Amino acid sequence: MTSGFLGFRRSLLGFLGFFAILAVIGVLKVTASFIQPFAIALLLSFIFNPLVEFFVKIRIPRIIAVLIVLIMLLGISLVLGLILYQSFQSIVAEYGKYQARFLSLVNFLTTEFNLPPNLISTSEITRTVAGILVNISGGFIGILGNVAVTLVFLLFIMMEKPFMKKKLREAFKHERTERIGVVFNGMNRQVSRYIIIKTIVSLLTGVIVYIGFSLVGLDFPFVWGVLTVLFNFMPTIGSILISGITTAFAVIQFFPNWNSAILAASVMILTQLLIGNILDPKLTGDSLNLSPVVILLALLLWGWLWGTSGLFIAVPLTVAMKITFENIPGLEFLGIFMGTGALPPSRPVIFQENEGIDSSFGS
Image 1 (tube, rainbow, N blue to C red):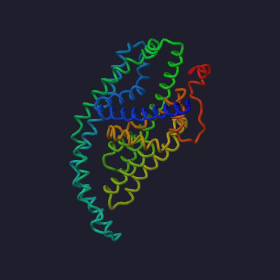
Image 2: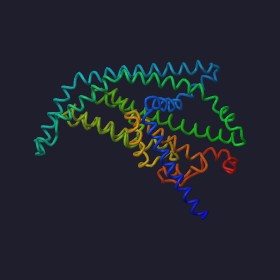
Image 3: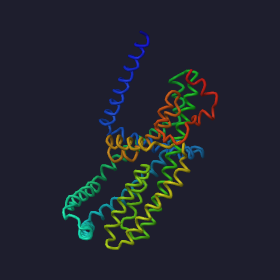
Image 4: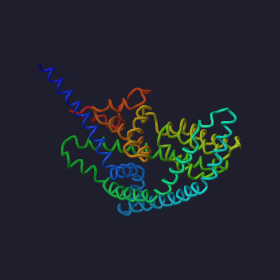
């Protein structure tokens, strides 16, 4: 009787959990217009909060330190946005030239390999690409609006950070409060470390690509450098996508000069292989590995929820979730399932540093 009741209770809890997840996903979809900027601001806070703390240590008031960082971020965003806007305008203006080269390339391939003339619907491809370019070029005002909302969220998040520990103490008022604070601080350090290192590695990759493409003579090297930085936040899949896009563009631009096209493709592919397979794993560490299946599911979910920006922040958000699960007793199994499985599971770093906490946290 008791075992049957317990089984029914577990099944009921499972169903409730499933519907709760569906409800959360629905809420995220409906409220994307303001939840999305908040999520981006939260991730940016992990990157820029150490700089704010540095200013505070040298006796600059926190509000002034936060405003300095926000002004710096706004200035960088405006400069990058202006350069990207002008670059996309140039691409739109010269679209006819690349369209003619693409048609010549298609004619060459169909003649050389005896392909059916209608195998590639050039009219549909060129019309689709033109529509994408026009939408991107015309959507910069909306992007600037999202940047403003994100900066407002970032301002309040960074002003709030010093009071989190005090709020936890007041909210729980229990002997476990300090342990919860330790767990929270540990997760904060690990997420900050991952996002900062990933940002540095992505910037390095983008700079190398920009310099390499400039030397090769590929058009719009700055655009490709910025896109490389963004796509690099999508492990493996992002590298494959940006490599394929730039290779296709290089072939179209340099046709029929195959040597220059191969050289441009080599710059991107070799950079991605060297940094993605050597430098990135050594800096981020194996403890933050995500299963390729989890990465794919995260990209599909967040891309469906929040569109293109969801694709770029999907992996950092998933890493934050994985680290959170690994540091909460009773939920470690979720973090293990989200990992690659290549290494045996280890105890969270914060518990290794505070051995007395692990045994009594859940008691």
